[in-house]
Image (cartoon, rainbow, N blue to C red):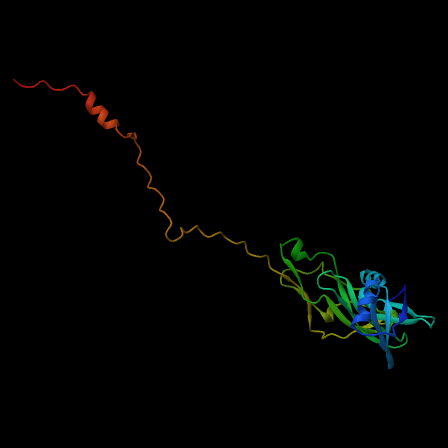
Length: 234
């Protein structure tokens, strides 16, 4: 989907690892603009705008304008980008030029609408298998997302590509109609804790002492001492 984003770029004449390092230290990143049979153009751009575009509602499907120097605006979209694996900063971007009058293929995210009856009433689990669907349309008609209503689904029900409702005058879905988009799984069985088993070599539990008075050490001996001695027979 076309938006109001606009990106200014400057052509890069100095290429190579050293020049790229100096460029990044200034807060810019290298990028390449290509497509429609034209020669690839190396430029420098501000990564902040790239970040804003990717965080927008249309995300990587956003079509925006880029102006190189004093040239005419170009309609482009982010084809690919690289991030620093440690810092998460942008390192490079590939921008694809777009002809607004030609159909293209896009991957559009699925948006779940409602809660399945099997989840709400029976404790099931919604399993989303396809989070994106490939479509073909004019760049100006690409949707931000494809809504999928799941409220009618019960346990073990599934929804196929053929059952997805969409505006066929705007775009066409290119996926196999029999492909499953999502399904409602039965509730997960509760795990029953197994009885504890003593570890090998562990000391055995002491035996339960029988009911009755427990004699303290020496108590029996003391009792014997208290008994009166029998008179010796003469």
